[in-house]
Image (cartoon, rainbow, N blue to C red; front, side):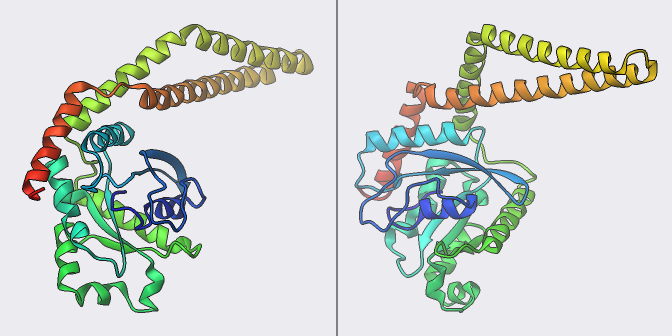
Length: 296
């Protein structure tokens, strides 16, 4: 989620996930000072949401902005399925007008195909369809066109799950239009490689701990099996069934443990991976080009 301070990015993230994870309240100052990533499940579908500070605010120190963009790329690795350009209804400014161009110039060509305008404060429509509101504004139409016609509206003040379901439906359509892939660039690919290398380092470092956990799990399941065997005694058929059940349960539990360890290592890698100098310099150059383009 990208957009200027105060448009409701954090509240939007909370609405999508169905719980208050990101700090959000009415304030003239940004409550989100760094990128944050949260996971959740919506209608049986796993989703991850990255909340950002005012990354495209030209008043922000370029060095800090650069660092946050790099960190967001780590959090979004191997690449986001969609950039949600969050805009508050009734507060359409020059900064919002330039946001999509900034995304395209910073993240490269093709980012527009993965972008969607998300209007907040849908209650201001007072029952008027968002389509009518957008089509009545030439500027909003131009903005939406830059996102390939993709847009949606949220009212973060109400717990209406249908608006979230509709958003995910539109995102699935965007993914389908893009051949089922997420957005990626060389920067994202290298960021993903760095995170993966750090993840493998963490897994190797915790190899002994993992081995002990596997041994404990195996011992626990073996004891359970032996207890069941004592109970069935000489019933050969039941013995075979229990052995199959044990093998299946052991396989499932070991897979679950492996997945849990990988997920934990991945999250730790995302937190620990150093901000690679080449990546920072690359983003700095992009920001410099942006500022030149904007005449700043």
